[in-house]
Length: 68
Image (cartoon, rainbow, N blue to C red; front, side):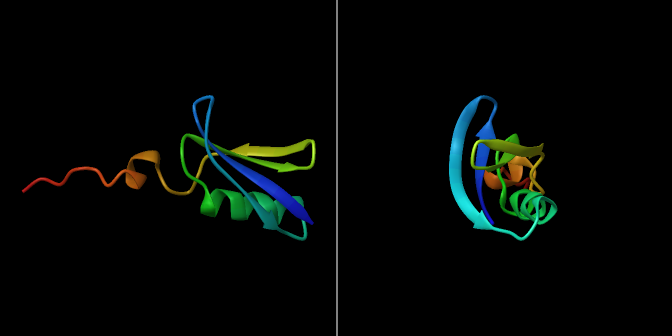
């Protein structure tokens, strides 16, 4: 089945993409693994499957600063 994944930063859409998964559970797992931002929404057509936190914390995507 085809799902759309929305990467959100608050109420702002950061990125979107389509994934293939056999079940809702698998789609949520993939969305979480590939997600970024504050939260990730997995949709199948007009049906919202679930909203989850991404596996990677938001700050890890920005590179951050390192103490020297």
